[in-house]
Length: 208
Image 1 (cartoon, rainbow, N blue to C red):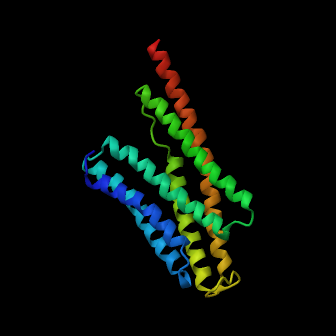
Image 2 (cartoon, rainbow, N blue to C red):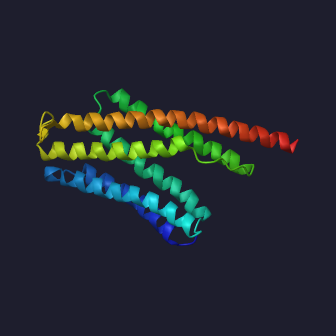
Image 3 (cartoon, one colour):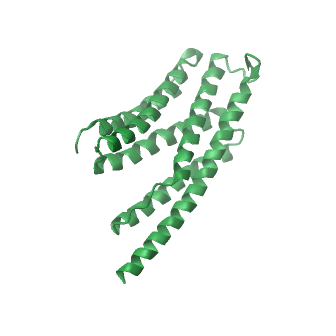
């Protein structure tokens, strides 16, 4: 393993995962822990952009980096989503469970496809829907963390106002973005699977 800047940023993002969990769950007065968790999560999302940018710009791409980058991304994002969904942001628990399952299953299926393709030396281009999906999920998780923090700061008053805007609007906006992100998970999975099937089929025809 080569310890270059992108790999260090990736490991920092992975290390942020337990920190976010502890800060979010520990009962610190006035929602301070949740606000700090939000800051750490935002920092982790920034490292996701920076490590890829630096690796490509300065030719620092490594096998370790490609492997750990996916693990770090899934760990921090999925953890944050689980935290905010089960912190009272979803009216129905079954909806939260379905959303988490869709996100996890999508990542599992695509990881399996990548593994099969890699065994045949096939590289499948990144899916634009996947990139947009990640953006929606990250932003929605941040908004819902903000909502949880504000709710704690306002002594759990869900009918409180921020200026003239009801606090519940923040939750509704965050949930709306997350639902879009989950829908994009499905679209991305289908699109990626179709591309993979075509690539594998073409590869088999060439081998024949």
